[in-house]
Structure formats: structure tokens, C-alpha cells
Length: 117
Length: 115
Image (cartoon, rainbow over all chains, first blue to last red; front, side):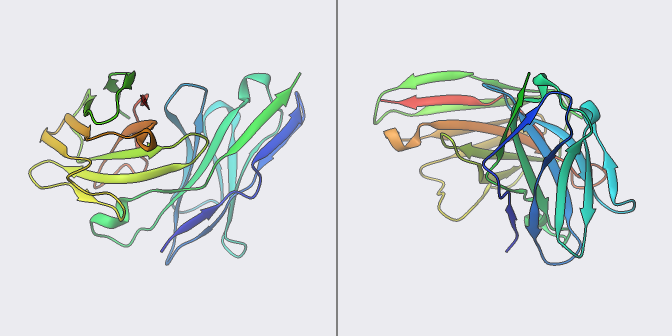
């Protein structure tokens, strides 16, 4: 079974500083990895994905993530945090094994990011 | 991508009643999913709704409690039956494709409170 761990319930960062939200995963085979963001009283918005190829992927709103196969990690990063980045961030994994079940996303428990002015 | 709407956006219901949540997509999609997000928790997949076949339920979720319809490629409903306060959650619809797009896109969610 696949799983995702987000070790930090909350991350606080000062505006303008770099931010990192951590994610590690466990899955059989090569993973498909995703980051989503949830603003208060809103649904999930897709930020970025890793499918194959370059380990550094860039996404919406200046976010990027680095896939590290040896450490089974997919940390979300941004060089300069904005107050408007404050939200709940979810990492998710999908196993590319084929068949109906492989389309299922498994989510981490989420990390609340607070950017302090 | 896809634009997804859900109705209602929120509701307050009495114990023992049922609520049907609608999910409408602006384009045809292969797969539709229903998730539950309990207060302060992550998302848990309830079921996968595929057009032309019965929904596939995850462990811990049963059709009698969460009947799902998928009459066409742009619409699905989830019913929460015989509700109890433990059913108070956000229910999210998402869509995906069997080829090409790997990510899922989510609707805005339905916030359900059961008294």
C-alpha cells in the first residue's frame, strides 16, 4: 500500500524568506507525486507534479519541488515566501501500476504554512 | 484542466436524514472521485465513480451509506444517508483522466454539519 508522510503539522516562515514543506512517500514502483494547496473554505488547487524526467519541477505561484528517489522525498520549496502563501499544503502520491486502483491519490495529513509579515 | 462545481456549498442537516451532493464538470471526464475531509484531517477517498459501471468503494465505505450515481461523463452525485454527527465533514468531488493528464482536479467542496 502507498503512503505519504508530512512530518510537520505547521511551518512558520517570515515573508521574503525561503520556505520548504517536507514530504516523503512510500510506493511500489516509480511514483507519480503531487502537491496541492487548500485555502480556507476552498477546495484543493493543483500546484505541481512529478511524473518522470527532471527531478526539479516547477509549478504555479513560483513553487517548485525536488524529487529525490534515494530519500523517497518530494519537498515543496519557494525562494521567497509571500503572506498570501499562507494555507494548508497537501502532498499526494499515485502508483503507476495500471488498472482502476492505480488512479487513486493517497494524501499526506497536510502542513499548515504561515507566512509572517 | 476542468472547472468543477458542487451543490450545495454547505448545509446543516438533522440526524437521520439524507443529503445528496451534486458535482458538475464543464467537460467530459473519464473518472470522478468522491473524498471526505473530516475536520482538521486529510482527504480520504470514499469511492471512484465511473460512467456506465457501479462505483468502486474504498475500505470502510459502503454503498448503502454513500450511494453514488454517474449518469454521464460530466455529472455525479453522492448521497450521505441516515446521517449522524460523525458524518460532519467536507465532501469533495474530483475528476481525472485515464490517459494524458495525471493529476486530479477538485471541486470547491460541500461543508456538511449534522446536528
